[in-house]
Image (cartoon, rainbow, N blue to C red; front, side):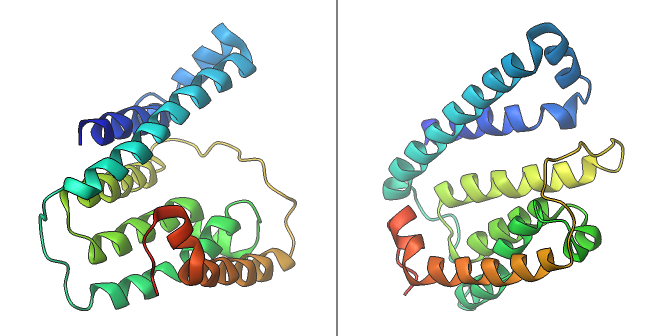
Length: 189
């Protein structure tokens, strides 16, 4: 469990620099250059992610149950997950979805985390999915006081929404059928 918590602290610490101190990125780029900053940021995030994956895998086997998920939790999770992949794709494919939702990736993370908290109740699950949920909500709230940073995306097109929805639902179907089992070892079927 310690490895999972340490991984979350590193991963979300790095991803929260812009929330807690919006000017830090600019200062680090001025000091280290764009590549130096991106290298340090990416390495720290990768270390955190590796610790999360290894820590969650180990903790999942021994973590005690914090709560029993509701009987309807699994069905609700399936419904909540439907828009997640289209939202993730809409982050990089500008269109009406992106304009309407404003921060589609963060909303996708919120839905993903809530869906998993509704169907999993161990301490390891609450730490992992709860950390993602808290971070995404904090990041969404931080946009109330800080300007959005430009994200490299494809050019805007009316087709982007169609691509986001169709490809996102296809990914959802693939995850339900076999990718979730391949990635996590847990079959949804």
